Length: 203
Image 1 (cartoon, rainbow, N blue to C red):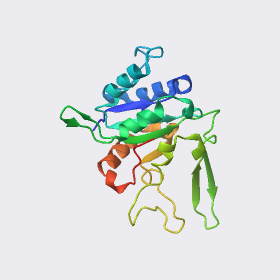
Image 2 (tube, rainbow, N blue to C red):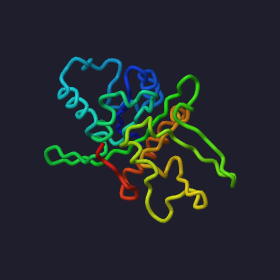
Image 3 (cartoon, rainbow, N blue to C red):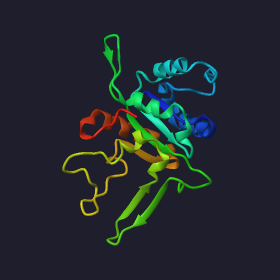
Image 4 (cartoon, one colour):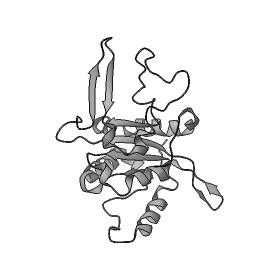
């Protein structure tokens, strides 16, 4: 089933990947509520006007796709868009639910090593490490936050599943573009069982 989506991204470095994601959505792109190349330029309007336009686009969506690019933290809006997506917002008599959120790591200079490193422990387990200092705190706070007795994918190493162990999973762009519905549906599914995660909704 298609989900209504919004893409949060830093325009100056990630608009091409934004367009690639919309293309990869195929017929499901009709459920995309965010900006496109044809959207009006709001750059020179007031902060309140920009926020209100973004609120209107995000409200009613069920999955937020965040493009994780090298200079993401320089954006004025992405952390706010994540916060708004995670909060339950009431309009008139209708209250929205928290969105599912998935991060798409942008390939930079042919690699993901600007953000991701992998190492092998002495017991043979592979460990994927994210450079958390390059991400907003609201993203870091919603990673590795699955709770309960079965939260670890490996009890020996105390590691989490890359896809299911974090409310905000981070997926390399090639993997995401090859099957966007898989990752969108995974994010939506987690939003339906949000009580299984320790969620931070405030940036």
